Image 1 (tube, rainbow, N blue to C red):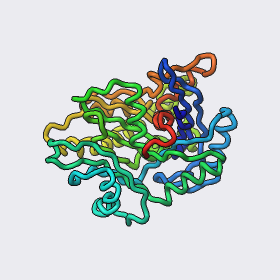
Image 2 (image 1 turned 180 degrees about the vertical axis):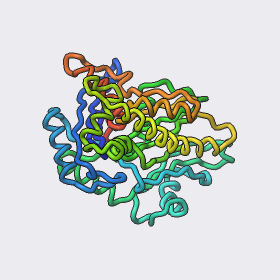
Image 3 (image 1 turned 120 degrees about the vertical axis):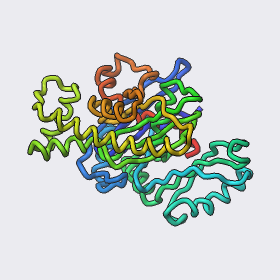
Image 4 (image 1 turned 60 degrees about the vertical axis):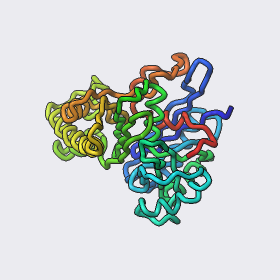
Length: 352
């Protein structure tokens, strides 16, 4: 049985690494760590500073003593298009041949500029005898850039996933999936957030929203005229992580106002899904990513969506050896690890 890939999440604020082992007793954590990236290293999912990414990956590899070289990574942003399409019934071979031509009707890029993949969602009478597919197209140059920094760090890119799907992998490995319920999983990154609504065991709606945790830091900086470092410290202090940090009262008000704006952007995407059919509902929202821990964001999203919101724990069903790991550190940073956990569940040779 092939071993799982090294889960490598190249995010806009840091690079996260997770290694997981599948044992007869369940999932077990082998490695976990992250390395910050300078600002503007990744912009809307595109790598602007390749040297900084390579350096961060090498540092993690050396510091964590990572064994193995096979990596699963993820891309997101405007360079990725995800569409649900319907096609007449055909064999897998016919589908392989037809997909590039089919894709031309649905994606705003030339088929020669993108890597195209698809997954069968359903092929029953409910779709009028047609096959329903999930069509994914990613710009070749972005896939090549991610692959290149991984190779430069002396590792091997084996699987290139989409961030919105990796959080679904992490969710399904840790939480029971109730077929008749739809849940939204939102990964709140530094500059980009990924939304995936899971219904009837498959992805019903995905969207990347260009807003994230940096919005809090930038607004604190602007309104209180402080440095980025100070604003970041106050943001973290206000989330209750660093109780020693004395946070000015105005910070709470700034965070609440930004949280309201961010929650509003998420809600607009959820409303778009809910308007897609008369019986569409969302029973629960799970937040992950660095800013999932901002209490004001949970409150604002709960109020706007009138739905229960919970911080997702991607290590909920993963055994963490307290002799090898600082369990408190793992729990404190669990929300940030969701994409990397989803990637660490992939295996070399998986259909991408």
